[in-house]
Length: 365
Image (cartoon, rainbow, N blue to C red; front, side, top):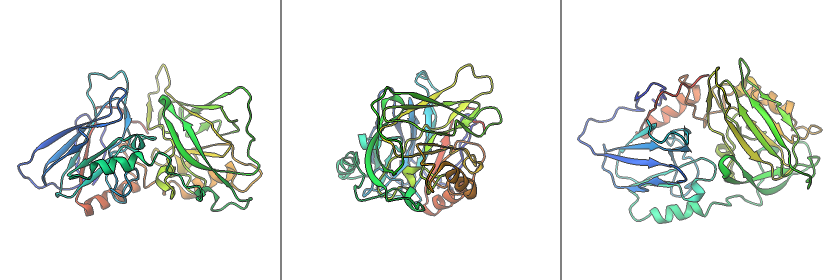
């Protein structure tokens, strides 16, 4: 089974690992200004373990395939987002452990923003195929399809959408290229001075984004300010309000995701996450912590209130689903969701062992 623990140095395995004499391999994930697994490849024998040590920023260790380097493999292992503060230079650093089951290649990527498209990939036993794997990943920087439409149109009764490609700038200056449907009736582009829209996420006994529904112009920024408890600002779609756009897109879209932002009740300052609005298409956002989305913790920018896909309908759909469609979201909470159960079952079938060794981070629901 796949568990995540907030106890320092606690390790829980997905599956029983045979007791064999095996080697241990160390891989560093990220670091100051580094979008890289180091080393990028390993040759390992069955029973060997690989310890992934997460350094600065917010990365994942996620299994993909050779054919689709930047997409989570169905049933593949996933560490979930592991944020490490920039000022944490001496550790302790969180780690994830993977046990090699056979000699077949294992393909891995970081699913944060466009890190994979910048070459942040890794492989176990790749033979001579790693250069091609990495080249395919970096070739996906514009992996949108001009003939595709977003899932958000599946229940729309408004006029057909126009599919456009936009680059969303997220925290740290990272850029995410993605495809949106631009709806008739949405805000028109403007050359006016940009505005920063502050959105408070959570707070004492609050499972809300405040405000939850805004209109923003091209060039504006939206700053999510995280308050008490542990929340995310994760892009979704109208059709799948409680699932990451990255996981539900059928056309390679990559949605933004703040990662988990734990904030104590006595915190003197609040972490923030900022995105830039580059077109007028609706932006759908949710908190992927436990069942927060199913309790209505969603947000929208530029929802077309005169159409069927308005904010109230988006929130109602989230509550109707009750967060049960979040199977692709990994939370660092000590509370295990039904999605976690499903994923752990797949892991057992695949014979993959994955464990997370976390420093005490005090994740709060």
